[in-house]
Length: 267
Image (cartoon, rainbow, N blue to C red; front, side, top):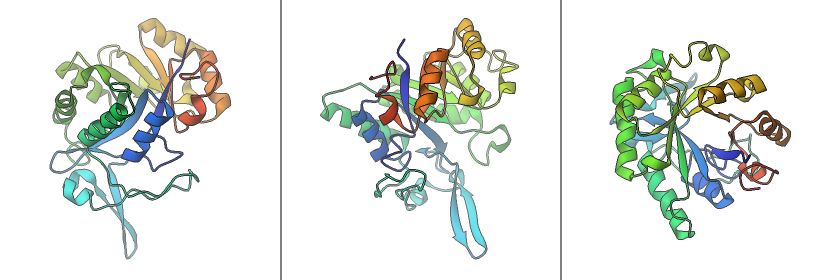
């Protein structure tokens, strides 16, 4: 069985996360799936960013503003191309937080120019927290409607996976667009105590944190009809261990390593 490799926030070893450069580099490496994070601006633009806020320096340290409190024009004035010390080979680039629609356009054009049209699957994580509705993001019904509209405008329904830790998002999106593919992210085993009653159906994917995963969990989820994609798996020995446990995919910061390990996607 081949294990699918997903580039976590793009090819982060080379370029800052969630930038157009990181996504295109992941495509160049041969990744068939990129994972990216979605938030919403005040003017209801779907913005690709892991954090729902931006930190600004002030006299006492830093202040924090949610992207949902900022217009997209304000957001584009903030540079996000600075290399991370966690990834010493990252290159400094000129970059701002892109809109989801721009990611679709740029990556699709990049693949077309490379002679690989239609080769990418987009795993979209909707960043949402039940206690932050109307503060950090819109309420679920409005939120998922914005995201689904962007997917349909791009005509990428068959190459989208929509995932979230917030089961409300998964349930509402499935209600509005049952034709799409869904994933439930799991950070704590307690989240599975009410599964699948919450979110109310068995999504095609259940995606747990790597240290929660054992053979019994994989077997149980497979028995329910869900595939298992594990996050965030960065060490080669852990990648191979996950393969032995029977997972269907890995979300990794280092697809350049995973793609060359035996039995993983691309190797």
